[in-house]
Length: 97
Image (tube, rainbow, N blue to C red; front, side, top):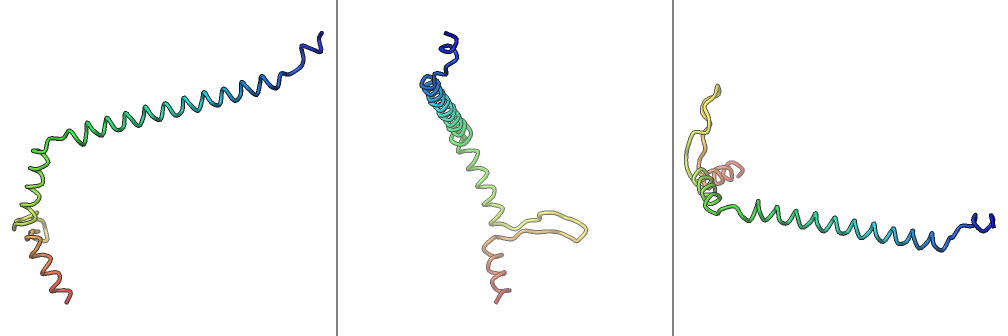
């Protein structure tokens, strides 16, 4: 009787091992899916829900700066100014020729 109790049930252990691997794999895939859903929801909240009026105003301000003359800063070396972008491009091209 003692010999019968000491035997390993290899078949049962293999089935338990395979079932455990399948269960852990299913859990990992489920957690990844939940994470990716959360990432997409957060992206939608942050990126897609931004009002266009705020971004349009920022773009207009940047375009106005790019297409105008002005003083950027005043320092020890003098004033740093900005010129319209098209004018700056043409002057750089003239200097390179």
